[in-house]
Length: 346
Image: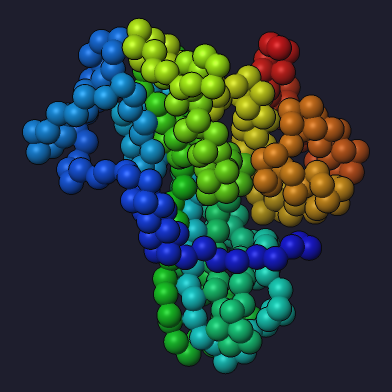
């Protein structure tokens, strides 16, 4: 991959984020949100399970995909699909991979006779020559590929490679909804992270985007609630919560982001239709592209114009079979027509 890799400690990341919040004066209330009511133009009321009512100017649902139940989403989008993964950190007698390298996507047919169900691949992150993190991942499936199936595939793969586990250190299960419709950006309630459909539809990545966009999104919310005459920040009491929310949503999901999203959704729907042989052909083509293009696609930092260049280069490099699939997908799949609509409605 030409870059360093690391594994994020969920516990340490959570502790660090909570520490920053506490140092900034954030207060936490011990309860569970039951529903959010739009009261007036002045704000909303959050109703909690313990009977607590909290009045506020703006509400932001930011506790994962499950908090999306408090938001409205655009209608007519595709059915949600899911990325699932099962991982283990283990001690082994001998690792068959380079102990100094991260394996990104191993799509080899380790069973020799194809796979039953959606294709999956292996992540490998050696911590040492004998301590390794293995993860079997289904990039996207509709319906989902179960954790049990992933576990069976992972252990079958390891047996085929003669990997002998001497100690299980940790198990990991990952469930990531991808391809979720964009939130209705005219609603009064806000969202962020997975609740705001910020997960990359074609990769499942989200942490980096959420961490990088959090400061600018918070600034957009503050700006929507305040005016700035000269050098003084002065609260504007007569701005409606609805108008403030609209400004914040437009900062999070401008037209440019929506065009990028349509491109990623096109890629997601294509991946869903490929078997393991088609997936291998696709990624063989993908990694032949100039490095800045495929890295930019994975990082979701290519502009909508650069994504068109990505598409052209992919078509030029691809074998004829994949070219045919791409053209057919563009002309026949609803994600193709949506992509054309988003790019032509400038």
